[in-house]
Amino acid sequence: MIDKLVIVESPAKANTIKKFLGGNSKVVASMGHIRDLPKSKMGIDIEHDFEPQYINIRGKASLINSLKKDAKEAKNIYLATDPDREGEAIAWHLAYILGLDPKTVYRVTFNEITKNAVKNGIANPRTIDLNLTDAQQARRVMDRIVGYKISPVLWKKVQKGLSAGRVQSVAVKLIVEREEEIEKFIPEEYWNITLVASDKATKTKFDCKFIGKNGKKQELHSKEEVDKVLEELEGARYIVKEIKKGEKKRTPAPPFTTSTMQQEASRKLNFAIKKTMSVAQGLYEGVKLPELGLTGLITYMRTDSTRISEEARAGAKEVVTSKYGEEYYENRYYKTKSEAQDAHEGIRPTHIEISPESIKDSLTPDQYKLYRLIYNRFIASQMSAAIYDTLTVNIDGNDYNFRANGQTLKFKGFMALYVETEDNEKEEEFTKIPNLQVNEEVKKEDIKSKQSFTEPPPRYTEASLVKTLEEKGIGRPSTYAPTITTIITRRYIEKIQKQLAPTDLGRIVNKLLIENFADIINVEFTAKIEEEFDKVAVGDEKWKDVIRHFYGPFSKNIERVEKELEHVKLEYEVSDVPCEKCGRMMVIKFGKYGKFLACPRISRM
Image (cartoon, rainbow, N blue to C red; front, side, top):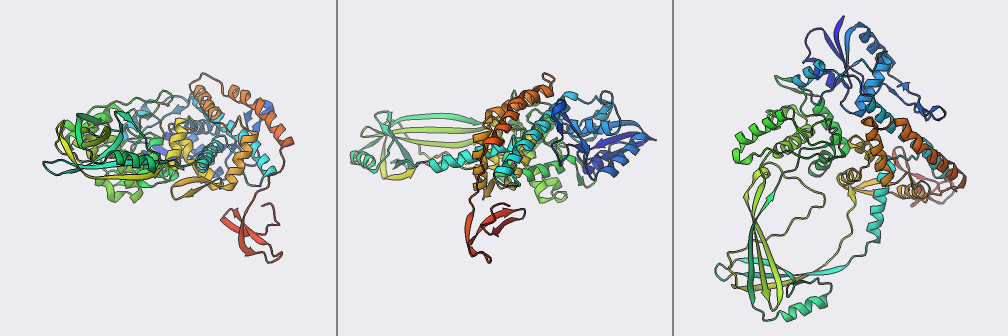
């Protein structure tokens, strides 16, 4: 007889947990979902109140039989799937398969896979949270309806193999709209004038930027305007009119959430979003370390909270004070966004005493890079602000105003360890300013003008797309990686270096969806639906009510589009290779394995 049967999702997680449970315990893995909607049909019974028609996943029969056998021999069964909506749904499906009552079965969750967390979880089980499983069902059912109703329209009217999705289509729309902004952008000319000055005492040169005239800001848009200023500055004396000294603080970023981890790993490590999540999963489930064996190194990696435990806070204090000194430590609390699901902590190391360098040889290069990023970000979040001395000097010449900005780092604070980056981050321009006095005259060493043009908004990168999706309330942390992977795999989007650009196919499908399904392929609608799912998750709304409210108008729209929409002909890029049979130049098409040449007479794939 098995005393405790613990069912988790992955073998790696099972192996890590095994070592914490003594006695007659058994830990097994469900290998993710064991039941799902069928792939061959929609699997939603519209006529009977949207009842999902779940089936056992093909290829899992022997696993299911093994789980049933273990369950019969177990005195106590603990469903320890991942601590999120998806994990709750897997636990619910497991209860069904094993004939267990979801209202009485033991459900345990671990935000981190450590001995204390596992033992506490087992000692304090709860029942399955049916509100969370309903929220997951609501998303699954709605996404299935949208995908299985709109995709056949695309197959019929555009090309076989196309798909639409509630979140993926909005992501494509954002990328297409950004590309259109770039294409329509008209550069505007502007000029900068820089006075290179020096003080008389030390002859130290420093740059002063042109600001305007008589205290009013003046923008320069042509060479004629610049020449007029330069002409009026001929023979000018440059006098220091004002000196402002100050202090500036820069505070550390909070511990990672899923999306900020994805963004920072993309910028700093050049990791694709999908890769970041895969590496993080391995760090969470457990890595084999000398002496310690399999050890979970980070807390659960799907979270939108920045909260951290008091135990972790104490661990960070010890690291900071021992390595850098008391003055580098500051006990910081970060406010989690009001719409965030605050069930978990932010992403942090589970064993703060295990530094990245101390286990580098036990990690793969990618694991080391991501663990180091997570570790340093967390420790830095509990450090003092960096402090700069700032200096602003205003200089006048013939009524024209110039300004020099300087700053020096007085105290590194958290920057001794970690500095957050931003996409398309522009460094502020500072110059080293000598010791000047008000009314002092400085010498003009040179005066330079430079022509520039305004630039269009940048294309999205994976990092900036994730940031935008999060800001607009589209999707959830767990959906970003599969969404981006899907739209690239479907060839709606292509990656050019690190940037995301729409393909011709992506533009055509986006145009078709906007013209015919504007209410669905809509940022506000998608964000509102996420709010509805959140209400279901806390019991404020019934999931079938959400689907009912959505389905009526949606189904009527589908009927209208199927009747009214004419076939959309795709235009393919023409190659310089003639077809052997008809002599016409072949066109470039895309298949399962990438680009291929096809006869232009074969209009459909």
